[in-house]
Image (cartoon, rainbow, N blue to C red; front, side):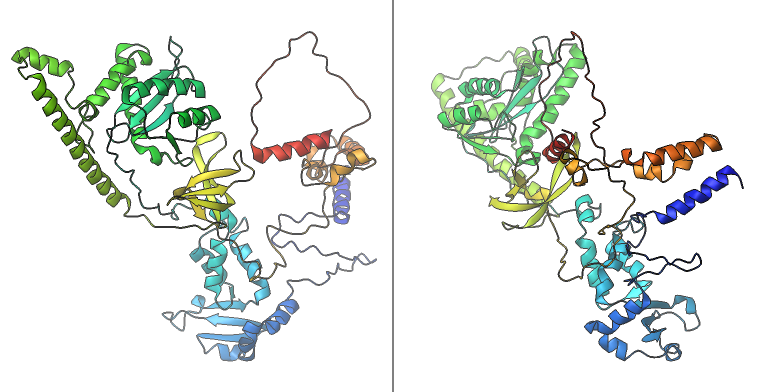
Length: 594
């Protein structure tokens, strides 16, 4: 026998004596096996919870199956019945033949084991939660189970199990869209500039003046827009720009913004309070709350892009010209342009100037008639615009509410919240479950979000999904599972704990997990590039110092060294906030390494 073959035999014998990690098997039945002294005697298992004797015993104990067990027929009698219960080797079985299946087509007959309640959760977990199950839907999961097993109310149990699956609820499926809440139109206000919406756009390409951002403002009643280029969007800069705008249209009664830090800062709120302006914050990650202004952003960006391409100038040099075009254009929902609703007449632009030049028109209206007509025209225009806006909102609401549905949550309800993925702002997924704290308005809720940057979050109902919890009391605790098990033995190599400093190594809750145990179990494969003698020597050497290759790294105390960076100037950088989900884990790892 060659040296390689000898090493393979020794490797196989050593693996048989070691503990195995059965995490990738279907059944995690971890029983202590007692081997006898003889080489030919078999290893016996103690109390296998999935044995046939255990199944027969549980079938006789289950109160829901007592009548079925008593009424079971013999296998010979079952041949003549399309649907019946019978016993096969002591196990209660169910025979089922489809109604439209001919009697001679035996391949369509399904033979199912009648499962007692103690095994329901295990079977449903293997049929839905395991890696080879794929978290399929209710119908496919139920069909998969019914090919082999049956119990009373199996379809409702499988449906409840699939709907309460945490993974499926968090990931979601394309055919399981949450219906939006009915549209709540923003009321049309009587006076122009009594309610304004503000937001920030950027960063845009930096101009020669140093501007990178745009503060956008819009009147909700007249749709009159304003865009102010800014170098930054700090609270002080935004407040100065807003104050300058208020000198044009007066102080509004209320102002609405998103939950940006510059709008929620103490300085901004203090200024709004001193000016007598009520501040309203839109719900997080719900731009529909400021739909009119968000739509203007799209138009403004497109106009800026066109202007820069055509005139080869910085975008901030042409913003005031682009605003004139936006204010002069007729709003579809209002039927008038913002200029007409604010100033009461069509402003004199290049087109009107050309018309006057060709017609050589001269105004003959006296001052009193002009003022009287102007007041009537302005009031009438605002009245018609308000009617058009209400009709447009009603039409939009009718179209939007076709698939809408009223949903209500109560304080204490568990929900999943749709949040953007960290580092990927254009993608989102459900997080949670979180708890509803209170209700704010008809469609907004305050949600407790522990572990995130904000412990409380104002969320629109369209971002919330009801979380279905599994009723553990109604289902017995699984005897075996493909995803969870209390592992008492394994192949993990625990490091030597010789002092109080390393006493925290055994706390696997936060310790780092490596793959050294897997490598130690396949040393021959790792050393396959060496000769036979070298493989044996390296294997003996690694196994002799096996305790220094644990899955959980520890601190070495054999030698210390310092890193000298010389006279290099230290690099100073502003600290970045860490995701709270990682903060606690990082603290534990740092404390562990120290």
